[in-house]
Length: 154
Length: 123
Image (tube, rainbow over all chains, first blue to last red; front, top):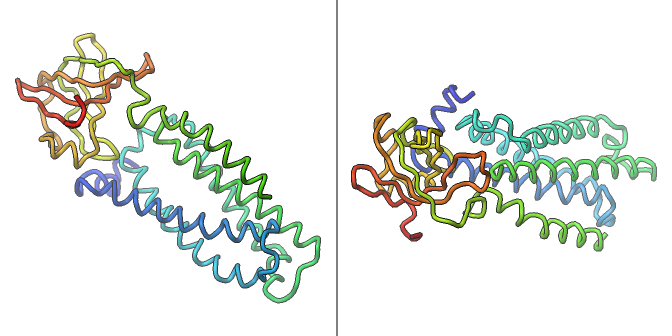
């Protein structure tokens, strides 16, 4: 990974490259977490008077864009000196947390409750199901962000 | 809900600064001034969050010199790939609090009587 073209680019294309890519990574995370936080809180039960479909249709594309930006720049940051991160325990917390967050999204999108929320009010049971997944989402992303920030301090 | 948020925020506020002190900034390094001489093993690299170089210390250990971020290190006169392997170097700064880690958060390096001060605002 370190020897890849991306790794070379990160190390050899200017003094500010790492800083700028790092900035884009932070912006991606801010976009993802800032948007998904609102949706997850709504799923958990905060702000019930706002229709879920109104929130989700606005938030999902923004969160997706944030994730893509964070993931793409994250690969670059890692490739800069990938060997330095071998054995960093926070990395071993961060990546499973991200994987779990993505699996949670994939599962959520397949639920009847999520499909139905665009068209009708959800039953109590469906709301509870989505609340659990919203809570899990918050835990996953908060864990990923916390562990990610701590990578630098190991 | 509000109570819960407050508890979470308070816990994070209490724990975070301690962890943060572990590496970046100067908290992860001893307060005492530290100096090590040696010869270059890995020349200056201006890649990543901090510029780095490695020297073989007179004590026989390979010391990682963590310099300032790349733009600042470059401004101090240390350019990418500088110094042939084997060049004599003296580094001045603060060593890691971890005794098993041969790392110096470096304030300045002296090569051939010329000093490169990457943190000129620190003495």
